[in-house]
Image (cartoon, rainbow, N blue to C red; front, side, top):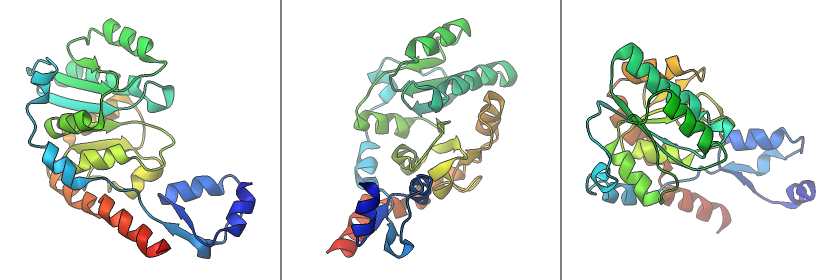
Length: 236
């Protein structure tokens, strides 16, 4: 059915080059003259409005006595590599003598395993699994926290990374899939060649603060209004 649909279509859109590549891996032939890449967009104006919210830590009863604030938004499944980020927190404490706070937003089958790991590594004051939150609440955390860390595999095009960049966070993500279409390493964020706790921690400590402004500038091209306009031009 997919092959027949592809043959009959006049235009075929993908949300990223990586999405196009993944589809090619299914061995379905596509006439490239029909293909159009239209990147998914985010509501940048709404994100700016939410930046004026109250201190999110107070709202959730989280202590503010930390010197590094790390955020991860990912469901608790193996391919998200959350355990590596937790180990990076331990590494930041042990090797750099820092007092980091990692907040994860997500749920999944690995929740109990991750909580056990946190307890065994004595990180209860440094890692908080908050469960599911609305997008507005996540944006509020992004506007308060310093670093956004995503170690996910099989990335097509991650909107949450765009949202973090729009909030001026220093984004550290896996050098995989669609991430490379958003992040220029060392300029508007950082790409991890290996998902290792030591590398994550080292990037956090060596990150250039100038990436914040560059991230905000870079993400302007991914505003949802631009996405809508491109679809209108294509189909209207």
